[in-house]
Amino acid sequence: MKVTDKIEITNEDNMLLMARYPDNYFDLAIVDPPYGINYSGRDGQKTIKYDNSKQWDKETPTQLYFNELFRISKNQIIWGANYFTEYFNLGKGMICWFKHQNGNFSEWELAYTSIGNAKHFDRSYQQDQYNKIHPTQKPVALYKWLLDKYAQQGNKILDTHLGSGSIAIACHDYGFELTACELDLEYYEKAVERINNHVAQLKLF
Image (cartoon, rainbow, N blue to C red):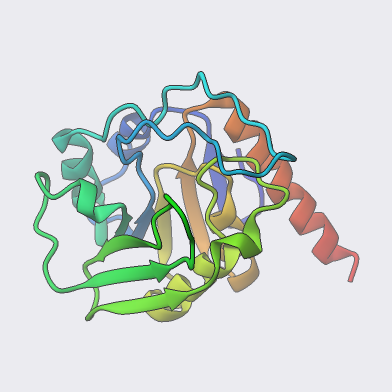
């Protein structure tokens, strides 16, 4: 589905999507695969409800997934990199999102990047807890920061695990071309609705 002239999102398995593209087609892949930690969706916010029966975080992607990802993209940013060390060498290019969480929650998340040296993004997770449509929804501000630091105008961006669609909103606002997919139909439909609402609101101003 063409959400805008530069953003195309499909409801399908990411392996099927990636198989359609030639080597190095995308300039930058920014992905947030399942970490395989059986995330339950419980975040302490009574106003947010998720279907905890979904099994999307039961396992990590396979080696075949990472082979395809590296085949069709020139550079990559991969969230949860510390969970995928058996599949690729992390190297020196790491990104740390410092989330300021307390209690039993992780204070930070780690991403691999094939571009440049280590950097960090500082933003409290609690700033983005309301109106969530996905249990592990990342803030639009994080994706805008990634595009500022690691992308160049004219780059083709890939996301194989769209989730809430935050990356699509960032790409739209910054004028990047994005190809993305989401396997879960419910999340796919909610993400498309969220993106369409954002685009419509911008047109009012």
